[in-house]
Image (cartoon, rainbow, N blue to C red; front, side):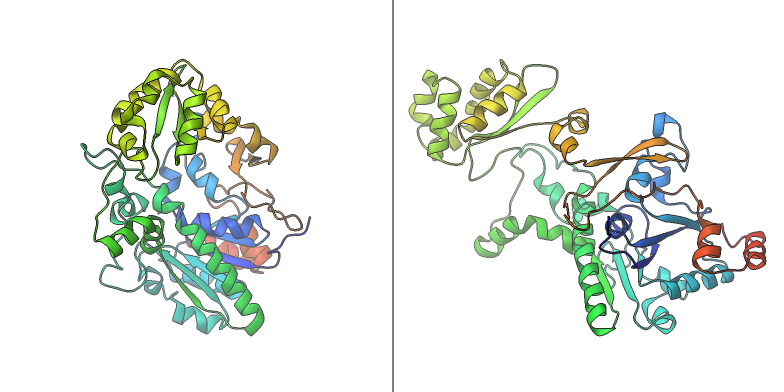
Length: 403
């Protein structure tokens, strides 16, 4: 099958999640990506569980594997002058250079944007860090766990009578790559039309803030600061996850209008309490929401989550199972769309990778190779892609350049 980004070459100096995730989009759609690491300072995700079968090892980490499929992998010591020389050869080969270090790191190695433009004037450089390349806080290091608090998600998550809940890293780690890859595609198109490259300065902080736009708008307009509401919603009631029959089984239900309320009551058998004045209007239901949730759960607990979802959806009421990880992996819809790519990894064996949610009919994303073991393709990249003579490669290897 054709590949929409075939011919695009990427020197990928990113690490952890946002950068590798962004560049994997390009790799999945056909770009040739060389992921650069160091054996003396490995990617943080190589040291982060889960590990395949619980056995630790730099080549057995699930997180790293997930975000680096379809990439070549080399190790390179950028603190060695000759390591920087190899990096410059890689940059001269590339169309895109990507990095996700704390601002100033690439400049320390002589690989900042102004320097690499001298190597390749039309280069596109994608830089993604916590808070952007400029500003009073640009040099503060961190990860998505820190940004969850900084962007306000932690303040909004949890219950009003408890401390903030930490939604870990998906916000902002899973938000920023979507912005980044869109910018990369735009920059590639601009270069195709004009022959000019450019610098992309991607702030993960700013990307995350965009996802709480409604609460920001409420503050701009009404000077109202949003607070934690648990699973409740200001414009839907009931709106919660309800315990169902079985071990730790739940179903979410959301009712947005009086018409949906009538349908909801019909599904649960129009119990006497549903006709009480305190549940007659949206405002009265909202005032008595905690009591309403308890009454609803008395009904949901007698049904499976699947039954609750099917009955509600049949009558036009929004409802969905709270799926476990096992549920997701066995979900018939995801299986039908081939969402999980199983590729044989050299160390981990058969390994499931997320496919791409957007299916391009003429140029689909494709699984081509698993994530690289540490330094797996160093010789191949140097000799076959960069054209390095064998004696030169051997000498650099002896000098510790590929560490």
